[in-house]
Image (tube, rainbow, N blue to C red; front, side, top):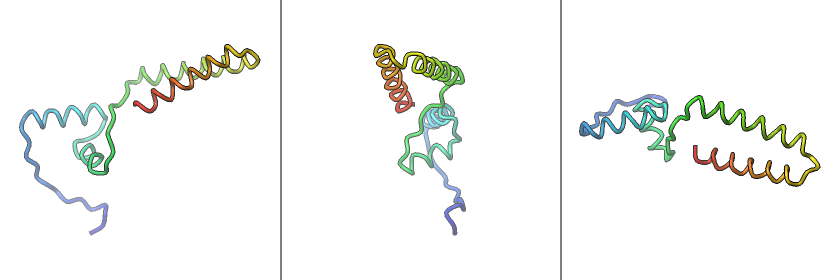
Length: 95
């Protein structure tokens, strides 16, 4: 048997546990099987962000790039750009 051959398992859950599993998997954009596989592999499935979130991030990147481009010689603008960069990193780590 290879690593890509799947074995069907039977799993007993309460109605609430099944509903929670379905809700968590859906929130992450995963099937039940893939959600459980991710957990077994030690990964923490994260909620899938809505399209509006990514549209917002795109606008934020554009603003950041224009600020950096136009404020090359202004320390206040560069400091603001660095603050935006740190906030974006925090957002990306918590997604």
